Image (cartoon, rainbow, N blue to C red; front, side, top):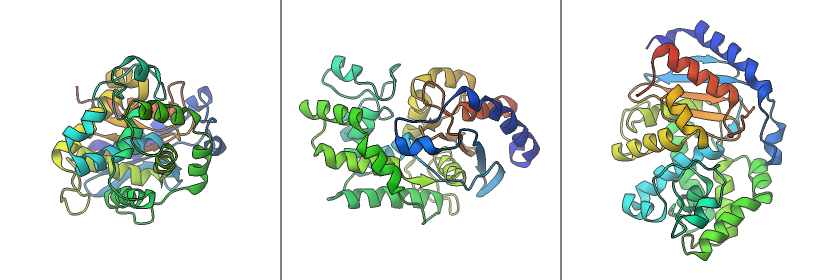
Length: 310
């Protein structure tokens, strides 16, 4: 693909997109995330077992945040299967914010609409197999390390604690669902696991590799052996298209048209089916919680290289 040998164009796209960072702001409702430099923007593109082009400081680390929802869903589906997972969380998009409680109150029987909103992700995380928080977290970490080929990936404990200490709305979602039997776990235990899951720390290259595996039907970047079963990789890509960019997913599908998942740290993971993985970090967010410059980068890449799946 031409984009892999065109660093000059990527640098130009990143430079242009970076002009928009002043229109957003970093996430400040999680205190540890408020320390990020809003002008940061970096991109890594992975294809054919190689990081083929980059722009910016791709080694700068950031936490997965909501991007982890895709990965916890993969683990839960591999653990329990589709029937069990989707008996407790739905498959439908929502036009509401990612942390909204509205649909839980109006949608019987308090079943979250999809795994990409906080309520759904909390239910999915509760389904990861393991006897303790450490066992469940280790399974998720090992999975991410395998996807990236990076055994040093771990949790940023400062971010995790910051999130846990301020997780008032997520506690509310959990207790509401526990009242209705959707969540069975101890709420504080589940929140400790969930906040650590969200605080798993990566860089753009790691993110591009994860996107590449999902894009290419779940196959390992080096050996081509399946890490994620084909049918689960397809489910992940579908959710990324329909729900991956919070309540801007519809507009993103029209403008960009590739499976992607964002997080409020400013990360975006994109997976061009049967093609490339893209990892982006830009912590200045728009009002939907997506990286404002990262969205511009993906829009420009999609237009230039005709990446839309539609």
